[in-house]
Length: 286
Image (cartoon, rainbow, N blue to C red; front, side, top):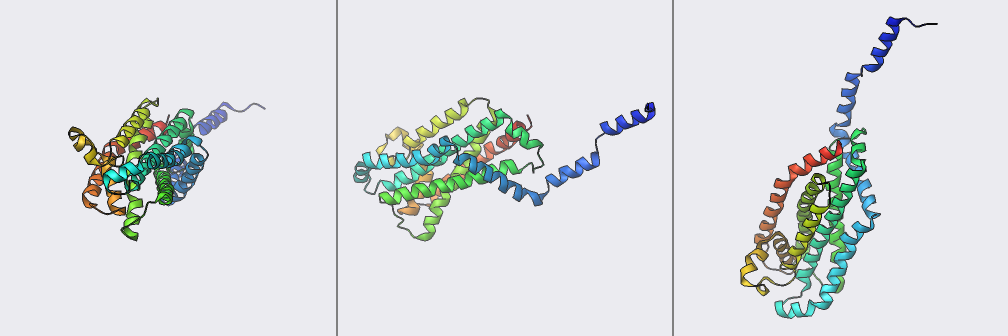
């Protein structure tokens, strides 16, 4: 039995025309505020599980900074303690904590680049998930990783002799300071990861962070540096954060270094926040 031309034409036109109201309703439902939190929670779990199974992330975020802390304390601890007139751990524990925070962000940026190149981000884009949940989940997962790194380095430092001399609340603030610094730094490396097809820029940032470590007040006190470089060492973001953490644990100035660290962190987020956001969504839609 031969179908009538008019019926066939009507059938094809009906099949080819998308259900626009239904599509709009589905998009509105996917991007509803009520599903943002559960979608973010699921994607945060995915990222944390992926990072925990990645040897590079575990090494850079936990093993390497803990080993660096032990090595610095063994090789230079006594000399720095005598020279600075306070236990060197009050400088090296904050410094290695920040090193773990930054190196973990580097590993996360490399993993993000792999997800972009493999098309995983693009596949997530077409799934029925909230558009903002992917990037928000990365921020939450970074926060969890930073807190874990800080706690692990604190445990290692306490085993070596590090103590909180200022009480409970300064100890809590000590843990939160790397979180602030780490989130700002992760925004920077995320922007670098989503806007470059190669790892060159991320590697350059890694080199810069290594230089910041050696030219910081966590490595040796500021008065040990030559006069011409002292202002750079004293006011670079890592030194200010270390000095704030040192004041919260050992005692000493806290307000000035903490304000300086806050300004640096806010500046990084202000400069690289929009590029990270736009670059992430652009990479997701490839």
